[in-house]
Length: 300
Image (cartoon, rainbow, N blue to C red; front, side, top):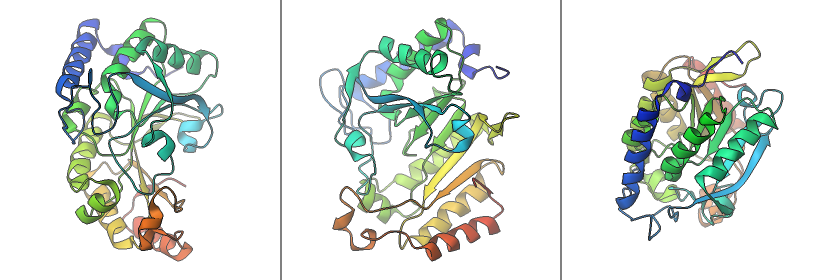
């Protein structure tokens, strides 16, 4: 393997300091912008997670972007719970209902090594990791001592604390956030996060500062950088344009953007008349044409 994962360059002292700092945050949790203040050792946060990791599944996943999948599949680890409450969430059984099994950081480290050594995946893809950053850091540190060398993908909903992300500088190689909305009204109505864009904007700027545009190896597999996902919602073209304007105007020009058209009504979407239908081909074409006009580096 030509690429050396960033965390392999961190000293033991630095790794332990970051683990300690994030663990301290769990005493009055402010890992994410909710800053709910829960003592995660004895109570659950807004995300409904306590101090114990919940993993729903792990292993090769062929359904991610091809730049992550390679030939053997992205090495996904799906965590239970989430700091958002998206009414149309397609993985609500995991993110909202918390489906999964409790695991220790040591067990998580073993999963990472299985992904690398047995499944030969090109990366470790941490899906919805925000509320488990301390435990993940401990697992990465443990796994690195046992030979882990794959780049880490931080696959999140975009509602992140810039301060927490700073503690991941030099640990995460690939950031893959959603950027869901620009409108505070939509953030509140659909995800119970009126400040979604305010926080996501700062988070993506911090991610971009750390890793820059998406870098691919000779086989077209991502090694480092920023890949932004945006799901186009029915009736949401104007909001999509504002999201794309931000990406074009404030992030590295070679970050990659996956403009997604796979919205379908699920979970509680039927509570909202505008979300009861699929996205039309015309709506998606208009969004894509707008993105192309901005000169964005689009996925596919």
